[in-house]
Amino acid sequence: MSISELITDRHIREFSERGVTLVERAISDEWIETLRAGVARNVAEPSERSRLWNRDAEGRTTFYDSQAWRTIEEYRDFVLHSPMAEIAGRVMGVSKVNFFFDAVFIRSPGAKFRTPFHQDEPYWSVEGFETSSVWTPLVPVEKRSALEFVAGSHRWDKTYRQTNFGALTGDERDQVMYDPADQRDDFPDIEGNRSDYEILSWDMQPGDVAVFNARMIHGGSGNLADDRDLKVFNTQWLGDDVRVRFRSEGMDPDHSEVMKANGLADGDKVGTDLYPELWRR
Image 1 (cartoon, rainbow, N blue to C red):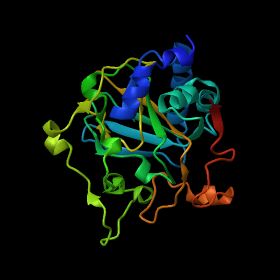
Image 2 (cartoon, rainbow, N blue to C red):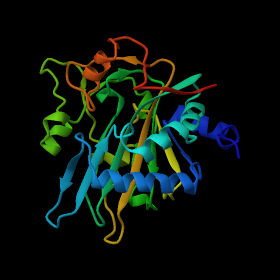
Image 3 (cartoon, rainbow, N blue to C red):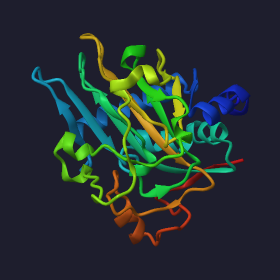
């Protein structure tokens, strides 16, 4: 099946209206095996950007790494040659897609640590509505352990002070600190008021992907059974309206230095070999 047949009007409508859509059997077994091999290499040879988000009293961990696609061959092969760029572009309804960065999340069996609810795009060194993150599990995922999404939150007409992940990790690279005079609203307490929102998640199999707008409020993916681990490869994609944006409160990941070194300035269209255009309608 071609990608133009795989991505239906339903996927496009769900992404536009709800902010997220589940695309089942989007990625072949061969690509999943490629990514699993890449993750094994990544764990054995973490990049300088890797960190443990959490380690509990029993030694269960949540491992994170990002921007490893330029050094891990399997990741690079997937980014450049898999159908993911076209999937993201067709779901977003844009004319072209640039790759932004990759991220891997690995939770030990039984890990309970939940990622706090947050949005992605306000942390990024870019700004724009036509963005997507693609959550790609490499192992079966139960609904109770999957990433959760607050339906329609990508279109809320508010900007929020985001969660400071540096307070969770203790890592200075994760610090996002707002000026006390900042006029943005406090981030809503989704977890404490779950019944007030439509929260979406699914049982997922390797090959299924959740494509969501980067302004979508999302979190979770903890609460694993004792015999279940979680391995997820994320890719981030940028559409037509996205421009470089350097944020004074901090960025995570912070691409500002490498962007400037490659001739990109605040307000520029995203490009260069760092952020290649990989699909055009």
